[in-house]
Length: 290
Image 1 (tube, rainbow, N blue to C red):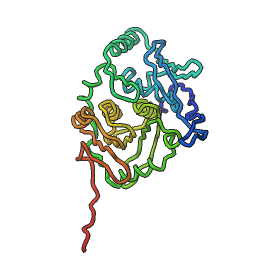
Image 2 (cartoon, rainbow, N blue to C red):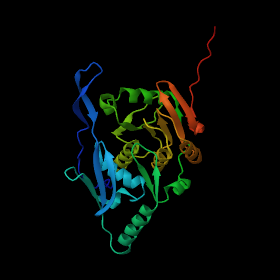
Image 3 (spheres, rainbow, N blue to C red):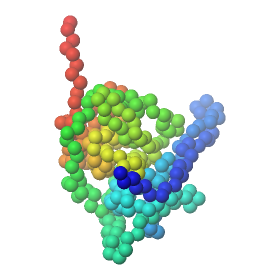
Image 4 (cartoon, one colour):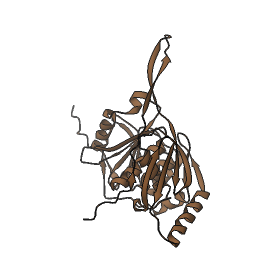
């Protein structure tokens, strides 16, 4: 069997929380944990792409996922190395060089895509380059997989028990990739960041690195379900999108168009099923006999 390709990659996570002193309502000085926030400028083959404000939990995966979701790089095999340097607040992605026309075509494609940007809602600012809004017509999600109510509740329990930066310091969003098993769910990856779009990009990068198939998985986010979140989940071929928050009108419209199964305001044993009801299986409650 051919070994899975992995680019050369650093492991340069930053400290995620910092302790400061604050004064409470009684005038007492109390130690308080706060979330980190760091600028990280992304370069591809010496070309500056974007500066992301990030917690710094998984900066290499964030860079890869950003390039993947923006369609600036087509496959992990194109990447030679991902190197983070916090002294210069930069991440440098080097591509595997191809001769002649291919190299020129990649440079032109990247330039063309960066000319057309859609500013999206987010904690901070998200951008969608190129024609991603038009590309959603090409997305085909599996329709032979189902999410049961019991599995949804199991996922909610896993999320509730998971140790998070949010519980310690607040001020961050979290995203998780989870399995979809009969009546059970396991968290495969949980990433937190100062913006939910960063967290979803980092998971996309991890999926690339680990060659994970999303076509039967569940994506969970603490943030609201905007058009950007729906598009990114669909790009990862994930048919199930769950949030503890609400949604936007465009997020709902795109989810309906793609046919993704989207649930919001999910907490404990409460949820609202918005789209893709054909994949969701509700529990059959036994009739209560008086």
